[in-house]
Image (cartoon, rainbow, N blue to C red; front, side, top):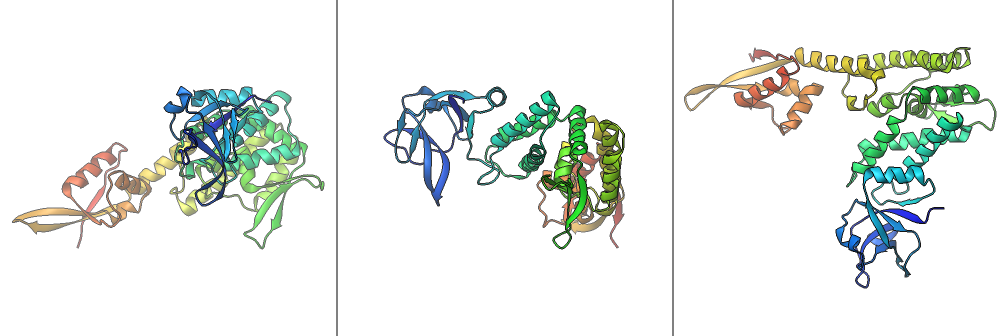
Length: 372
C-alpha cells in the first residue's frame, strides 16, 4: 500500500485555525462539507497552489479533527508525474472533486484502465468480468469531452493516454477474449428502446451492450460519433465472425468492414453534423475523416446564398442572407467562430467577404443569387 495520496485541490471554504486549502471527499448537504483534507499553513507549498492542481501528500495525517484531516504536501504534480505515479503505484489513493458524476472520478477510472491494459499486454488475458469492467470504464472516459469540467486539462490527458495504448495488438487481444468466452448477440429487452447485448450462453457469463462493444473494439467511433449505434441486424454477422476459424486480426478486420458499412448508412441518413472528427486520430480512420470533410465541403458548395440591394445614404449596398449557410456544418461552425448571433439573418458585404475568404481555404466558392 502506498504511503502517499494524490489530492486535487479545491477552493478553500472553511479556513480552520489558520490552516488553508481543502478538498471535499464527500458532502453532507448543500455547501456543507462532510469531510475535508486540509493543507498546513507552515508548508511553503500551501501558498503556491491553485484550484484544479494535483498535490502529492503524505497519507498519514499530521492532525485529525471532526471535520477532516490535515495532510502534509510533498510536491505539486505535473500531468506527466500524475500518470507516472498511477502506473508505478497502482494502489495509490486519488481524491478528486471535479468529477464526471458524484461517484465517478476520472483518474481512478484511468488507473483501473491502465491496470487492465497492462494485464492484457503482459498476460494476454482478462477475466470475463474484467472485460465487462473495461468496457464500462471506456464508456465513462468517453464522456470526458462532453463534461464541463472546471479544470479539464488532466482529464483530457488521461483520455489521450488511454487512446494511445489502444493499438492493433490490443484489438487482437480483445477479439481473442470475445472468442474465448463465446459471446453471442441477442435481443435483451425489445420493449425498452431495443437494447441488444452480447453474452455467453453460460449463466456465469457477463453481458456487453452494443455501445460497450463499440467502445472496446472501435473506441474512436464511439468517442467521435455518440449518436451512432449498431442495431439488431448485426446479430447474425457477429455470430458468424466470432465463430469462424480466422485469426483474431482477420475477425477484427471483417467486423470493422461491417461496422463501417453501417456507418456509411448512418452518414447517408443523418449527415455528419454529429461527427467530432478530431477524435479520429489513428491511421485506420484517415479515409473516413477525409470522407467526412469532403461531405461537409460538398454541402457548402451546394448551398445557395441570397443577396438583396438596399438604398442607404444615397448608396446601393448589398446584404447577404446567411440562413442557408447556417444550415450546414461548416457554415454553422464558421458563424459561431465569428460570434455572429443566431438571430442575425442578414450580413453586410464586409462580413460576407470575410466569410468567403475563410471558405476559400477549403476551396469553397459560395453560390450567390439575387433574391427575387
